[in-house]
Image (tube, rainbow, N blue to C red; front, side):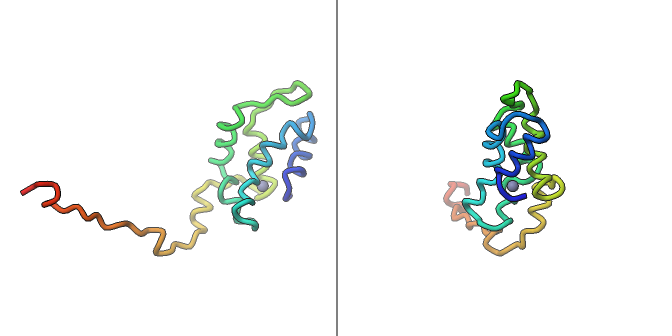
Amino acid sequence: MAHPYHHAMSSQKRWGGSLDDTMAIHEWFDASKLILADFRHRALRHHAEGVFMAETLFGKTITLSSGRMIPTRWIGEQHVREDLGRIPSFADWARAIRPEPWMGRTERHAITIEDRGEP
Ligand SMILES: [Zn+2]
């Protein structure tokens, strides 16, 4: 599954209501395509923390146009499962990142004992 529209169709089939009821949530999950056009964009939001972030942004529940109230988390879990087959943690994604020297670079602090006025 690739497009928010298809995820919204799946949500409608599962829980009723209209496509617009869940479209914004599915669009939020896939908005990371703006910064990376291939599947690696999913590392930003397609994980357990992303599902909980959606809940923070869209509320703990949404009310469908049918009047039915459902947990927002259900929509996020559906989206991630449809794309990845499971709900990974962010740690799963991080383990797939090949470490580069610049990632661990730290500035040397120029402050010395003399700068702090200590003997
Ligand atoms: Zn997606």
